[in-house]
Image (cartoon, rainbow, N blue to C red):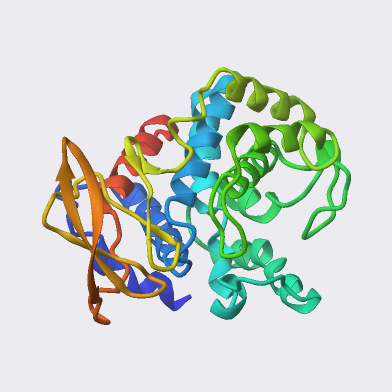
Length: 298
């Protein structure tokens, strides 16, 4: 797809070190996923959170380091297919029609086809294609059930659903962690894999999910547009005096330091088209690439 040819300009933006070809190929996938996520003003940090939850659950399940890294990558890339979902459906505040939901349900196959031919497709294709399959066979796109669902997809599916429940969306506010965990527990064996689901519940009971929920990076909590509700995503390297923008209403916010914590204050101005251009978090992506390449021996 042409998007592969248009993202290379991001590679040198803030990435100082020389990398090998496998790391550059991996970076191309992560940047593309980041750009797809940027279309939705409500899902800031979703890919990072699902990746971290997936890493945590896979590690807690005793999987080898290479498998843990692969599954975490699948978590970062799982929604790649939303590139094919129109904005008016992706960001709809009301209930989706049956026809609109049918379009949403195409995103696993679209993501899988988008990845086809990429040299590193094998690292994430099963998580991308099968993360909405469910043990009872009522998921999509193939209606797989039980052990026919790949391990990567079983893990990413739990983590994706948990993050969706604990995040604000256009049609509802986020729910408390305990409520989301209770829903997972109620649906073990039907919507969620029982073995991995029980391990995830144990992580929740031990408060090991709290530092990821509501964050867009380690130690970086999400902020919210006070004018219309979507998330404002701050980067780890953000400093006081910079500006961030709501990608829904275009409102401008000043980043300020209040007793060592970064806060966002509305300036009552609107961002320009240039201000609203998606800005890839090259530092976060570089960290994911380094961690993954080390574990996968790329």
